[in-house]
Length: 401
Image 1: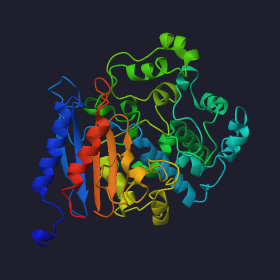
Image 2: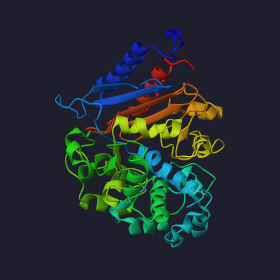
Image 3: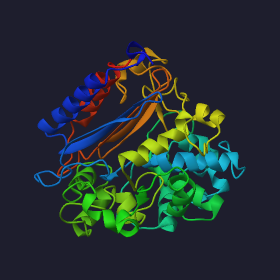
Image 4: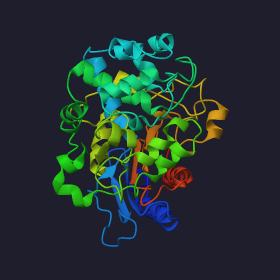
């Protein structure tokens, strides 16, 4: 291979990734992070910078540091398990969700909920609200199904996009129903072990206790979620419960940051709860880029999942689970901003996690960019959105289209 044929200059890429992460550290967005860029069949470029805990110089980010993936769980666990359920004949994306969760037929908007399909949950078009602090009212599958049944829809299924944790909580329940097996066990057996994701785990303190000292911590308490409840007029009936609730004290480390996953669902959910290292994520993405030795997901399903299904409904384009590039959609979609930045091609797709994690894959460039940070340590930084777009821009701009 001639040098001029290589689609990137490694020195420039290393410098750009290093400078980008260091900028985030200097601006106080996160204490440190790790980034992996894989282009075509070249070895991944992996850069670590900073520490995995704010104020601790003795905790440098390492290549095997585990991060709370937050909502990346949606596309790393729930989405592939649903697609595997489809190709093994256990369900169809057009199935009504009441087929698997009949408990939802007892509550508000029953007629609307009868219309919700698996497809609606995957594309965030179900009409379910985005978030509710259900853990203040109950915990466990039975309680969550009852509470979601009692929740009014915010719109007719298929008519709008509302990014919904509730939808992916239900997808986790559906997966457990069709396989008759707990979600974390299914994920370990069908995804992690099959794809060499050696340290990926729900509840890592129980599953991977030897790695406890190398888990990036998140927030100092659940202050951010407490404020979401007390400062939103939608929850006046829950304010007293906030004061009485046994919130975690001190820096959270090794248990999932998300309240519904931790307090309500014992750390295991379709919407959040997964911890993983950069190598776990590299191996996971091989399922989507055709490089997996055990290529689990049918290529037709991969294509179906990674194209826009909401081009007329939302400025943020949604595939199945994934956010997809807006550059092949409407101008309003482009202007609204994409978490992958301004330079991803029309075929690109990705996802982010609240804790500061992200994946973006651009088939045109044959490039996969994975970034793991803990922007919630010790408190939640609101600058992550702007930093993330600029981060993707400056790295993708170094690659040939």
